[in-house]
Length: 382
Image (cartoon, rainbow, N blue to C red; front, side, top):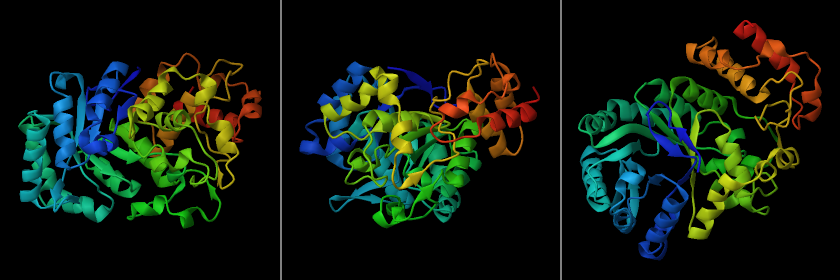
């Protein structure tokens, strides 16, 4: 298992994490087997969004004796009412729900306390001003949560949360179909068939800005819905009109700026292992470029996917990395010190480009790579 830093939190997290979908199967009966499989494979990150008492209790039992081996991302603002999940901003309910969470998990702290389901700018403003953020900050000061996070499907709401400086971790929906959709307050638009009725071209600029902003601010992204709820794995259901493999979806998500871990929404040990297989997959199995270029409903022409098909550069430049730094600088409208420092240690820089364009002949997406290298040379002052 490979590990990545979770933004600036100081936490080292497994590239493959685990969602809690499977914990609800058989009234929690599968939880221990799934945690055992994750533990054996080196998975150390678990997301628990559900407020279902059976799920919380079964996870607490499965973690007994090994709580310290896992980093828990659990959600505040989720409670259980009348036999079903409820998202709440009522402080008395939030406090009650968090106490229940700690009790059922048999722990006295949560590594990442996730403010749940912030899908509009208005909702974030309510959280900032209505006491929810202050409550999360109080829990952090008391050591009951280690870091404050926010979960969202809306890049504009997420940007506001990240810009506040209060958020250290962002849980966001990342996959090659959702990334083309414009910001919206109804997350169901991301998977509605009519949202893909017309051809879509290139990443939504707000989503791209969000990823670059998180990278610049040191906010780690934990990925949900990498498989689009399973739709991307089924050609009949995929909004792109063609199926991808779990490994290809994970490779795409891990290639986005600031992404630290992909939370596998597995319903069984077998599905979890299919995601963990990413770690031993070949370059060919991880390669999504050919599949993307053949999508009948989506066009990524001209947009760098950081897929690496441009390599090897005749001058030895790591083209994908230089392009990422270029996009970070462009997104910030300047040259952040951290980006400048990371660029400075590259062995070969954009100024080494000879404009031979051999890379462009290999690019599946028709990116103007030589022009990007020229722009990077100008920005970074090679």
